[in-house]
Length: 371
Ligand SMILES: Cc1cc2nc3c(=O)[nH]c(=O)nc-3n(C[C@H](O)[C@H](O)[C@H](O)COP(=O)(O)O)c2cc1C
Image 1: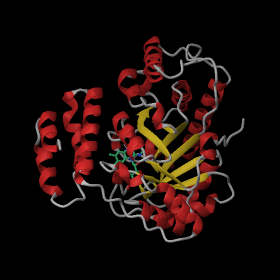
Image 2: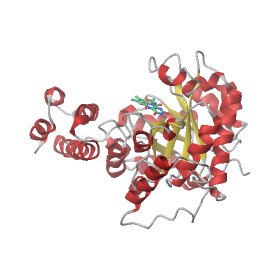
Image 3: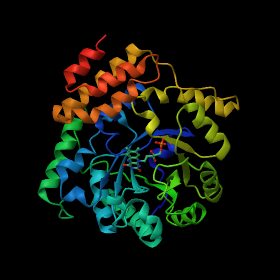
Image 4: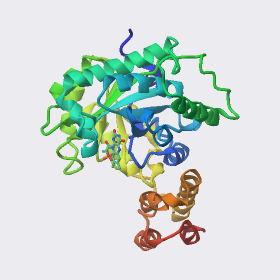
């Protein structure tokens, strides 16, 4: 079995500048806006439970909805049982994703209490078995293994078929038994559990040759406190040198200018941006110019682009309308984290932002932002 099958990662121009996975943030509506107005090199879904996919398919598979314009798109899963990853890999392949990413970085108690997420750093043998199982699932699917053959419940199959039909309506008819391609397996992790052990941990992960390891420069214990340790990420790059695995850095990058600086200082093959993209899809806009600058060795002078308030309001409403169309007005409060991002970084932003935060209905936001 070709372990480090690079798939689409090979064809991306390096360094890769991508949208980090964020639960409750990088949903279908958010990814649509980011793909349209920012065009990062790659997008990740929110993480989804490899086990839960089979019990609550409606809710969990919704995390895996995407549109063709969002490619290349990688589905992220978390869990603790290798057999769940084996089966979940089949679903991810069947849904036509470009890649599958294993979460070994989530610090949340509800995730880590069962050896999931960042807890996997403390059980390396299990982490490696999970990578192997996921890859085996991908390969078996590519060799013709069907979801029916795996005895996956009819209610899950129905959701998968509906998602494929919906996505491909008007495009190409979905051909579940044709064009079965292997997709690459990657990992996203942290620099340690309660202390920084990245050199040891990266050596372990490299045994299974994931095509990419994305590293958030904090330990689990740090959660989101303090600053991301890019020195630790740089050491991981050194350990991985020559292995063929790409190392992406992540943590506290607020602009392409900062991304460029981190790339130059550490030698990472890519950077993922998370929180700085919320209500700010434009942060990716100059990524091709950044790559050209890096190639030529000229200074990376790319602060966040100034986006006029009228454009911010227009895109904020576009995002809100699409989100509510998908999820219903009942979920109105969830859009406020995005609104808060859109309504920042211009003079007097705080006034309109606090009005939007107090809004009780989508109508109120619309009349506030309509220009
Ligand atoms: C609200 C939120 C949800 C997140 N959900 C995920 C997730 O589902 N999967 C994952 O690997 N990381 C997740 N992360 C971590 C981010 O991908 C990223 O590693 C972290 O935010 C640091 O990058 P940043 O400083 O650019 O935001 C999440 C972070 C936030 C703030």
